[in-house]
Amino acid sequence: MPGTNNETNTRNSNDDFKFSLHSKYFSRCLTILPSHISSLDNSRVTIAFYSIAALDLLNSLPASLPYDGSELISWIYNLQLITDSDVCGFRGSTCTITSRTTPNPYDQVHITMTMTALLTLLLLGDDLENVQRHKIALSLAHLQLPSGAFLATRLSTESDLRFVYCACAVAFILNDWSGIDKDSCTKFILQCRTYEYAFGQIPNAEAHGGSTFCAIAALSLMDRLNDLDQQDNLIRWCLQRQNEGFNGRPNKPDDSCYSWWIGATLKLLNKDFLINCEQNQIYLHATESKMTGGFSKWPDSTADPLHSCLSLASLSLMNHSKLKSIHPALVVSIDVVDRLKKTIHSKWKL
Image (cartoon, rainbow, N blue to C red; front, side, top):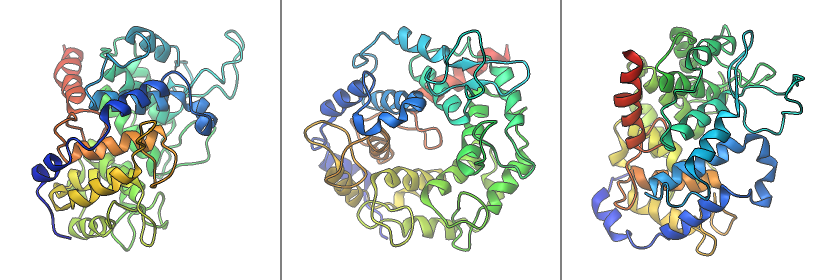
């Protein structure tokens, strides 16, 4: 598929997206969950992450926050669960806390919630000084299986590339890889590659855009991308996912989130210039809600925080002048990652 000039495409549609309306949408998501996603109450920190990450891309922090940033930071730290004998990290919400004195066996750390909690703290300007980073980093070893994969929680039966990515993101943020066996992790990732040269969630599963991003982002965060051969074949598979927007698998309709999952994969492989940015923007325009703000997965559908944030993230990948530049592996602005590495990591080394 022929590439197009990113600068020309973004300039032609700079004024078409309803960015001020999107800021209001994400601000509302921080006050009350839309009814159609109320089932996500147990993972509320991920909703906060998508909303705050999007507001940051929109240059709307802290002005569009419905609460003082310090209140949100305190709320996230209340989700931190540290024990001496189990996995340490963050819960998704307080809904499983039934008592402050009697432990609830279902009150568990979740690896995805730990990742999104840490990223949200960074987005809010926190320095992570109250994060029990060494205990969290070391406890990742309790979630890694002999195969190299990771469980989501100690109670989980799922272990796939989603949680491999989350574990690598947590270790990268904490600048501590002591709880991850990188060799077995890399081996598991490569075992998930299919005959199409993309990645399924587990070995022998169908290749999928989301799990392909998780594989490439995890390898990038571990500095193991050079362990992946046949990259040109993977790039070809990714480019074949674009119709107008992107789909996640052959013979599936376009879906706005894959504009990020596939686009970021190509960015990590230094081939994002091959994306037809104009067609991608046309599709994202079609999924944009002109009344409430936000983006849906398909045209004429209901907006949700995940697809809304990832649609803006895709536009950021295409160098949209009204959005901050984004880090392709961590789904937050480059400003945030620069502060993490240059200020926070440097201070930890002292």
